Image (cartoon, rainbow, N blue to C red):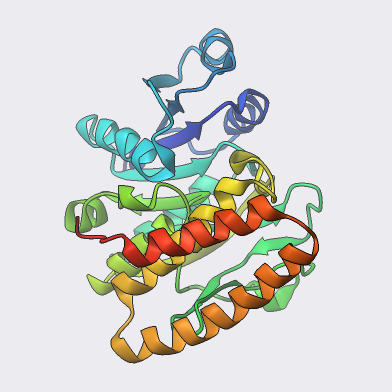
Length: 298
């Protein structure tokens, strides 16, 4: 049988060095029936110029401004569906892939009709045998979205999980039927939680969220968002967790979530105040306010 056609979507925003390294790693993969789509989110560096010169077979879509992770990828998804892709793979530009990563994902997806979203086992780039993601667990009551095995050395105990609560958007293979069923990523998130939201929506339609244990990639954590202390990260993570809970949790879960959330935020803000990190505190408070007042249906 002919191998399914895969569209690999890579979102770039001023990430020339990382994006080029990612594209170079894709050249070595053993799966051949794929097309790479680079969606540039209004980069101000010379990313597009360099990629055009060095990767002539990569399709480049240029946005005039930064549309965020969700809408940027949506543009690539719409293009891919028009060009008859069977699967869409969202891949972070700050990743390096193993040569078998895609073939292993396709093998698992094709083995189960209900396998709608497939992920890779993800390692830290600077600690290549240390896990960043080997499955995910969601607890809506406490607002916990935990990576299984995070910061642990890979071992046999992290090699058996097949189904999981969610797959992170840095390596997310989506069947075309899922997109036809639940449509695109929710652009209201802009960045963070749109991937978990998508997995929940797919599960609600009867699809399985699965981890391809032999699909391996390495992730430069937080490079694409400007590092761990980026103020936008403080803002969007706090805003979007509230939007997510408002959208997916029942009344009892919401009460328990907000009890834990505000208790934890009070401690976090007190620590930031002592450290005189006023900008971080303001970003958190603005995120909380916007999360509480924003209507996901509007």
